[in-house]
Length: 50
Image (cartoon, rainbow, N blue to C red; front, side, top):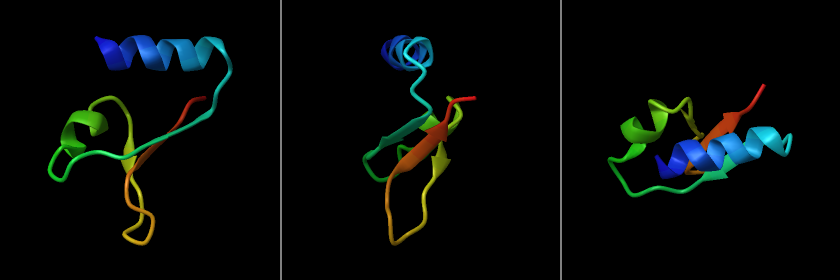
């Protein structure tokens, strides 16, 4: 629920690029929300809000 509220806020504020760092093995949680795993040389996750 927290992530949904944050993503909704970003959409309302027209924030397009969202990036985050997460603990190893937690990527599937964020992938369910639309995030993509970044390249190994730039670890973390990203999402482009259309």
